[in-house]
Structure formats: structure tokens, C-alpha cells
Image 1 (tube, rainbow, N blue to C red):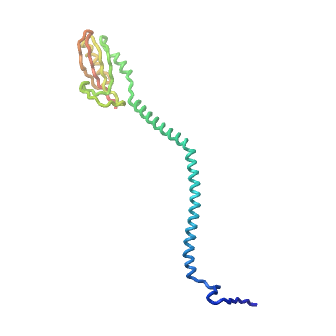
Image 2: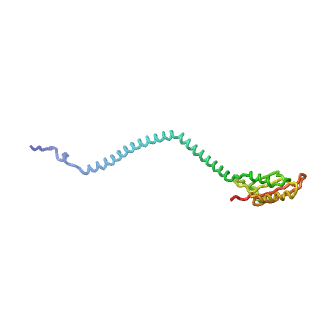
Length: 198
């Protein structure tokens, strides 16, 4: 048996089976953006909570790692200071010279009546000491000049010492700067330019 639906309402009140496309479009135009905005806001709140928790965890990790970070920074600073000290030490060792051989040779070549009162090794230029202009000293500069001051009994003793100094392998040039007669004998000063090793 077939069943029929009978709607006794007047025609303008009957809604069954009628879809108003315009009203549906307006409702969708209002509801869809509202749903997208509401969904985006909910996603934002979820992400905000997750990022906030992650930030709090990161801050706690940073706080727990702060002492280790300070130790590492101290170690890095100490290492750079030690590397600078090692570089300076290497520089000193590179320019180090042993003068014991020179002193031994001076004892062998000095005449009997000649003795040294002073021996100065410096990085001054070989020009006469009076012409030397003061400049900032280089702590790593190789010495370039040896100054011998002493006394002798005779002038030939000074000449022999001068000739023997010229024969030593340490010096490029040797000059007699002065001789003065004093009551004890002859006072002298000799300068010698050190040979470059390079």
C-alpha cells in the first residue's frame, strides 16, 4: 500500500522539499568564514600553548646549562691566553742565541796584558753609538752589535785583539771606537757587527 503525505498548510507556509539557494548561499557566506576564523583561532591557541611549553623547557635547559657554558667560556679564554703565551715563547726560542762559544773564544784570543771590563750585546745599528737614535725596542729583535770595553797594557795588544776579533766567525765587521791613556794603562772600546744568520 502506498502512503501519501498530505500537507494541509497554505502554499506559502509549506517548506518541505523546497531549498532556497539564495538563503543557503548567504548562510554559507557567513558561516564558512566564521568557521575558518574559529578553526584558525583554535589551531593558534593549540600552537601557542605548545610553543609556550617548549619555550619554558628551553629556558629551564638554558638555566641548567649556564654553569657549564661559563666553564666552557673560561676554558676558551684560558686556551687563547695559553696559545698567545706559547706563540710568544716560540718567538723567544726562535731568536735565542747562545753566547757561551763567543765568551770561550774571547778568552782564547785575548792577549795576556788585555782584560775586558764590559761586554754589551744589543740590537743597536752598527753605526757609531752616538749616531744611534732612540726607537721603540723590539723585545724579539736579534742582537746586531757587541761592544767590548776594557784595558790593555800596550797599543799592540789592542791591535792583536782587534785582528783576532775580525777572525772570529761571529762578526761581520769590527771597529775600534776609542783608546784613552789612563794611569792603569790604555782604556779602549771596540764595537763589532754580528753576522746575520739568515
